[in-house]
Amino acid sequence: MDAKGNPPPVPQGNPPPVPQGNLLAQVPVDRTAERFEALLERPGLKIERIVSNGQASPEGFWYDSAQDEWVLLVSGRAGLHLDGEAGPRTLAPGDYLHLPAHCRHRVAWTDAAQPTVWLAVHCEPGARG
Image (cartoon, rainbow, N blue to C red; front, side):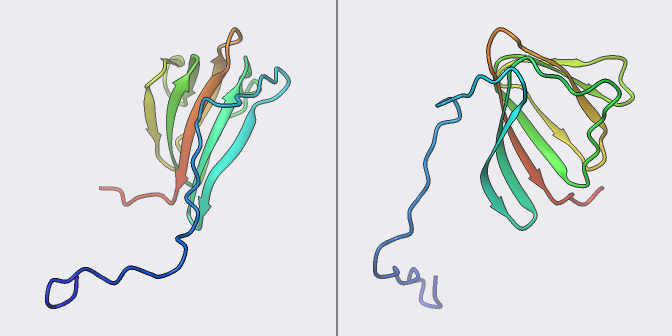
């Protein structure tokens, strides 16, 4: 709005294309490796779809990212083990977690009977308070 309360002018010409997709469309079934697909990347931000088909983190391996990660389980099931907890948390569709930077975690298991689809948002760590 300007000083008189008028909205900003509408740009002329064709608007930029607006990408559209579906997280559950064309879900790959690959029993040999997880699949990572970047949906949006900007400096300090990455949104990706991850598809697992029975995969787990290698024994003894822990993710330890310098970025915060927010993850949503869209379909399937998974066990996510956070360092310091007695065992993995069981995740079902709709469950989400915010993993602060350097929160060590590993995927203990994913559903081998159906694809497990995750939506992961990686971003610069927020202020701690």
